[in-house]
Length: 227
Image (cartoon, rainbow, N blue to C red; front, side):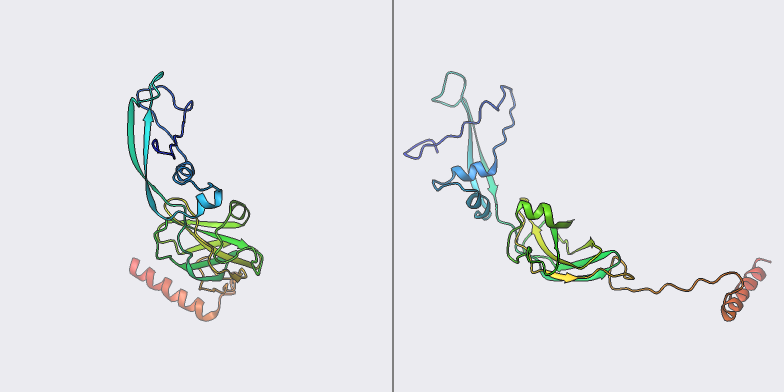
C-alpha cells in the first residue's frame, strides 16, 4: 500500500542483486503481516488464514530515483495457513514388528499424512490440536505421501498410541485425529489381518507316510511322461 495514511513498503534490498533477471523470495508470513494493521503475531499469521488471494506488487527503483519505479510487476499469490480437517475412523491393528494404522481420508484435498506416536494413553496427542514443531520432531513416527494416503506401518516393540494429521498442498499440517492404541503382534504380517502358523520341519526319512507316498507318485508320473 503506497498511498494514504497506511502507506507501507517492504524494502527487500540489499538481498536483490543487480542483474537483468532477478528472483525475489518474500516469505508468506511477511505478506500476511503487511496485509493488515493488526499485530502480526505468529499464531495469528500462521493459523488464521484460510485459502485466499493477495495482490502483490513488486517495484524496482533505479539508483537515485526513489519516486517513480523503473519496473513494476503485479502478482496474485494464493495463501493458506490452515491445514486440512483430521482423518476419521482411525484404526490400529497388530502387525509383525509394529502396528498398522488405517484411516479414512479427509474430504478436503491433501498431499500427505503424518502419524504420531506416544506411550498409551497418548496424552500428548490431543485430538484437534495442530502439531507444533516440537511435537513433530519428537512424536512423528511415520509419514505417507499421496492424495489418497490411508494407511501406514509403524515399527514398534511395545504398546503405542497413534494419531494422524493430514497435510495440504501448502505444507500445512491439520489437526490431530482421535488417538487409538495397539500392541505389536508376533505372527501377523505387516499388511495386517493374516496370521500364519509355521509348519513343522521334518528331517530326512521323517516325512509323513501319506505325503511321501503322494510325492513318490508325482515323481513316477513325471518320469513316465519324460520317457
